[in-house]
Length: 138
Image (cartoon, rainbow, N blue to C red):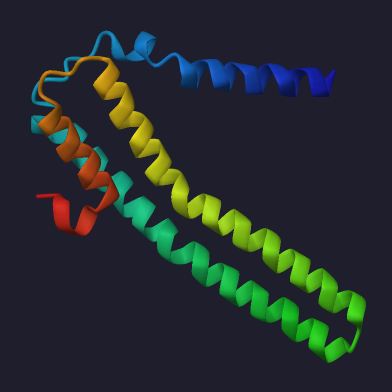
């Protein structure tokens, strides 16, 4: 039963992601970034993304050093192999976390393109603010 609920949850999330027109139909996209609330939200999201992009690699380096330090001290080949496989899995997870914001922004830009937004320069300003908060947010 728990597995069935997990499948329904995943299916619902996928349907929510693949059908953005239901949520986006009632929004007015003209002068989107002129709204102070949207501009502030984009800036906050940009800072969160920037923080994650800096913290995740640091955490990966520290945890990798700890795991390899324990494996070297124990003089066990199996522990060294486990530390190596754990580091590889963490690096893959770090790369995924690092590129998820770029993929989301590409999806958002694609949705804006398919929705026929007339003033997409303003929309692009908001997305650039999220991706490069230090240079593109005024």
